[in-house]
Image (cartoon, rainbow, N blue to C red; front, top):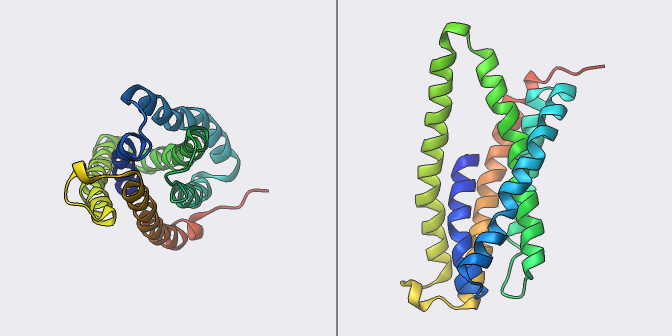
Length: 193
């Protein structure tokens, strides 16, 4: 679910930045780089948190943080500044590390040594399926919410409306992910003294 949301939402950001805000391709790329920077910074922090509170608790925290981040992305509009976008995208994409790092570690560590290659393959398959699904579902929702049939008809107003509503739609998807994580991860959390 997380990879469905992250991939789909990242695909619509260039439309927001270029058609909605009028930024050049270079500026848009620079602003979008705030997300991977956040992920790179939060990845080692995520590993340290997982060592303290465990993988399942960190994954749950990551899903909650990602849900909050995607909701914050829904606050973007035609008047949002470049700095505001960069800060929110930094936090949104950075929160992915709180899920991704312990998720990968727990899947590989729970697999028997002779099954780790298979576990890694299935992890990559699920990630790819999520990304492919996200590209289709989220981008379709974005075009629906812009109310246009062509990119030529994009204005700053309908692009911002499309982004806002698409991120709210994605927030709803992530609420489902939160519920699933509470049912799956919370019973597995081992509290440490």
